[in-house]
Image 1 (tube, rainbow, N blue to C red):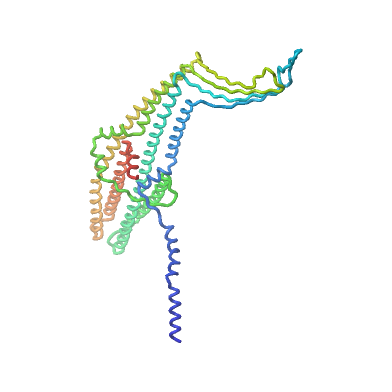
Image 2: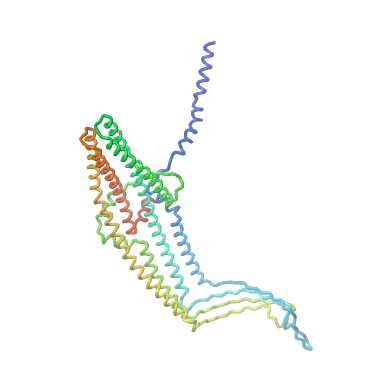
Length: 456
């Protein structure tokens, strides 16, 4: 009997702790863990999302689509137009002409006509061909403008990305500062109890700690704002985290060691804005030719099928006819319209040339500015790294001296301020250095090409 009871108890305990029940509890645990998980993005991953979701880039893509439709419109000028027509007329009264032999209707009660017309009109000055050439160049120009928009937007995403990294690092520095000042406040409170320091040392430590805590709160709010700005630019709706991308030092050194003139020549050859304006110069030349084509006559050819009916019918009514028309239109005077259009096109041509030269100068400054910024950030990194090492050693030494009564509160506050400043400066310099590489790629017009090659 006892053995049977023990067996039953063992079966019950085994059922309660069976793997089936553990398996039932496991999904619940997973469901609780899933909401806490945040996607982690690198800069390259954010680039991919940006190119797919950015409204500004999609607007530029629509501009390219519109330019392609402009080509279709220009192509339609070479094709004849087929149209159908018809009309029905009802008169107020019927008028007849009567002779001794017969009578016929001068004005019927109703009449109707219908037919088809095939017509084609071409300018002898070749305006249709010129318009078609302009539309093809317009597509190329829109494509370059799209690349320029992509590069500008990718650089904006890069700036926001490194702003998030900077503010995140600033929050970490602020937290470490709060921890150090808390330990110092506790140490000052302990030494005050034993009479080794005055109350002013504790008050100074409390004041510094309060200031550090307010900086931490400000930094956390700035981090939330920076992440919101980055999410807006990229098109992310959920909570997320970012991962710092590694910048190849070889790539950076290649840019830093290249001659400035070489980088400028690369920019002249690669910048999409320059390519677009160069096409705009050619388009403006074509537009002058298009405007001058208005001085040439227009040749039109028509083929018409015409059917007619009326009630009462007239014996002289031609119920069906087919005819062709060859028309030459040569306007001699239009109030100065053609001359004004030609002069306007010539002015736009001069504008495009001036815009191109102005942009070349701007690109020149952009490249030089980005190049010098890269060299500056590269040069100060080593100095700031040494400064941070010295500031850390100084703070540790002053802390030890304060513990043994060899330094006062002002000394340790100064050492802590130097340490915090050094950490912030080094952080800004590191991220500015990485960002300056991307700015130089944007200035030379190779940023989008680099992103595409690395991503795909």
